[in-house]
Image (cartoon, rainbow, N blue to C red; front, side, top):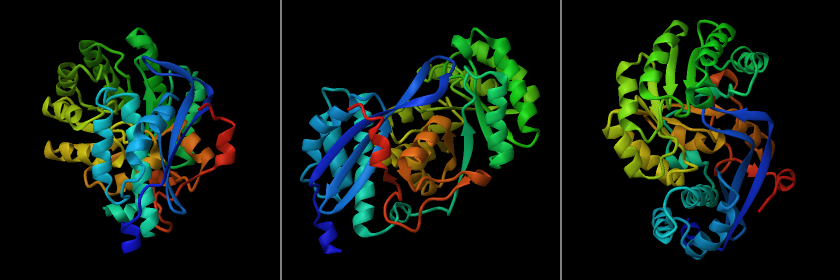
Amino acid sequence: MNDVLDQTVEDVRAAAYRVPADRPEADGTFAWDATTLVVAEISAGEVTGTGWTYAPAAAAPFLARTLAPVVTGAAVPDIPGIWRAMVRRVRNAGRQGIAGYAISAVDVALWDLKARLLGVPLVRLFGATGDRVPVYGSGGFTTYDDDTTAAQLRHWVHDRGIPRVKIKIGESWGTEPARDLHRVALARRVIGPDAELYVDANGGYTAKQAVRLERRMRDHDVRWFEEPVSSDDLAGLRLVRERSDADVAAGEYGGDQVYFTRMCAAGAVDCLQIDATRCGGYTGWFAAAAVAAGHNLQVSAHCAPNLHLPAAAATPGLRHVEWFHDHARIETELFDGAADPVGGDLRPRADVPGLGLTLRHGAAERYRVA
């Protein structure tokens, strides 16, 4: 044990991989044809910890040039101190955006490394609240035609047994409400009366427009209305929340405790979304979860399901983890040990040290861009 506690970081590496989408994708306010995975690998002796984020490829050289000098030589067990040093280092670069994404990947890699050095599963290092966490299937992009949407939803609910699913609405900045409502009705027909139906507008509506749409969606028993308006519009979120039967959720863009505190204090959400790949890794996750708990709110993990799994399982106020189509596909392809959502739950790895995932370098290399 003493040898482990004396270990210091010897090497920090970063790489970016651009993975094409399996078909064109869009939500209410953005479109894309690929997703970039930025991976941090941190070594102490013969042991390596792995973390990642979904960010522009520029996060990889930023991590290697700006953060690596701060992390190298630091004592592996002292992750809070390393985290604080990284935050201080990026003061003039800005805490949000690329810097925050890079910090997140490093923090996750450090926790993975610490658990591997101790020879314990990461979920045991954190301390589990249970042996599984609920997930919801997430996709239903606005670029999908009806057949594609139906096939994806049918696969999740009827083939995989996931009892919660989410589709994108707010198409073209809220200018296609008739198609939005059509797709909501389609989703309900496909999944049947028992599965929970969620929608995500990605900030595409105005507040009053969102209120009107939510009323019309009640016929289809929509339970979760994510980002009905911009996450920056806390007053608008609160208005929609106060007038909606569906739970209003937001928070996925949060980068620090101040962001989450403002959102919770404003009464803007029924459930706080947290993304550990953006808010400072696991250290940032647990800080945000504490803010939510202080406001009597549950939390939901945004995207990156395999990365979130051990922290989610250690969070008492967790509602669920997002099984996001792109990230689930990438993590399953590029990592050994990826989870399986069959039955609607994920089980954190309790049989191997650390996260329990290993990057397949050979598979990833064909996507490498930095």
